[in-house]
Length: 142
Image (cartoon, rainbow, N blue to C red; front, side, top):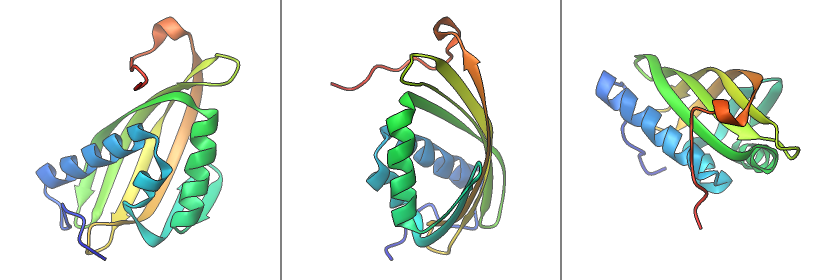
């Protein structure tokens, strides 16, 4: 596979770049684009779901963004070492009834030597919020 810089071992600067790249990709809400950042045999835990491989990731993200309307995410570097990065995140979305939610948690990432994420373990909590309490405003592209 073609290298996907920045590559491990990470520095603070390159870890922050990797986090920003992930945030940008996830905010695109494009399952194909997001899945290409992961190894073909990537392993995930997302809440109570365990996924293996890009195809399962794409299917998961398609379901996720069909449910989580007007999704907007912010990731922050928490820690890094070698080929691992830990992030904190928050995202906001609303369901089909119009109820807004803030989801927040932590992710632990492990990368292969080519800069693809081989493992992603996410712990996530959701809380209902009022629309006027949103932190992240975002206009849907035309």
